[in-house]
Length: 238
Image (cartoon, rainbow, N blue to C red; front, side, top):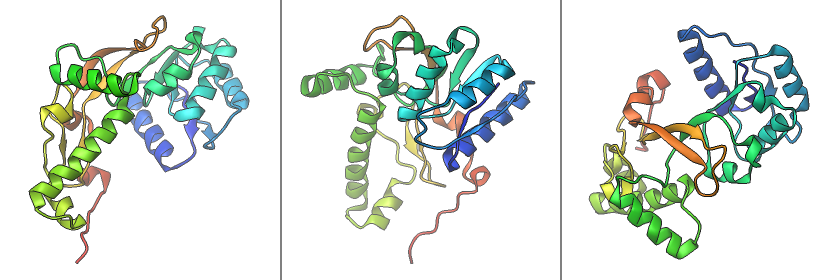
């Protein structure tokens, strides 16, 4: 694998995690060139990648950085020479890419097409009535955030932020808010929301909104490191 690493804390954390998984599975990391956030020209790194001839290029960039890198990699003909894997696939990014750049495997944080879940179908229908477009993970995050605050305040019987935070510890979202195949809850130890990961392949021939094919769903507790392993320690105000 070759990993053009976004040069900030999140990018370094992801690169280290991918490198560990690669090593555990007998793979070789050929390089991890650092790229500053907001890069518009990936030419120098892509030349290094081509020279290294990896089997897989792991893309950890997000937003416009992801779009720019994938467009340039496609122009270099790299999407036909190697496989692509992503730390995160975002609906908005896929929509912004030309068809030849829509390749590879990765995970979605939420996906609108869950045919066996009537709660999701209801949410999508209501969302489209309001906004026409299909909801993305960002849409779901906003929906979850507002319901979470309301449920926390109701449980705490208070608007005090510390009391609400305590009330959210261990809180499981109801099915019509979780909108997924597995339970979604706030972990007590570090307040991480353990969501379902939608693992799949970019639909290279798909048209909007069918830009991704879910192959597997994985419950958050199976993927997340423990609070102790993450080194996270929460301290409440006195």
